[in-house]
Length: 95
Image 1 (tube, rainbow, N blue to C red):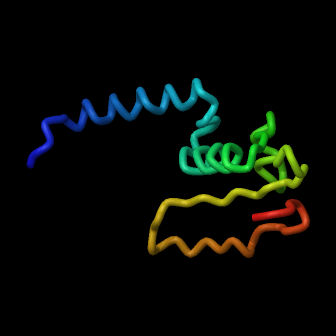
Image 2: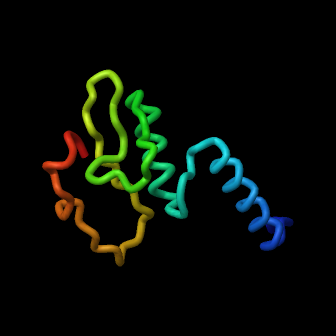
């Protein structure tokens, strides 16, 4: 079945969704996948996102334990060879 939505309409819908996610505090930068991952982890672990998006070493502070959580998210791309082991483990408690 053919979709009746034009590419222009789809892009406008995406822009509207992006604006709503920004207003809700889910998307805080131009790194859509990373921002959604950090928000998701903060919600799952009753965590707090730092005010400064350039927080070094960790992304979410887990409220009950005070542990610093490092969040790594990425879209699936078989050509992406990024390795989580290049992070600095002394800067966070859990990955």
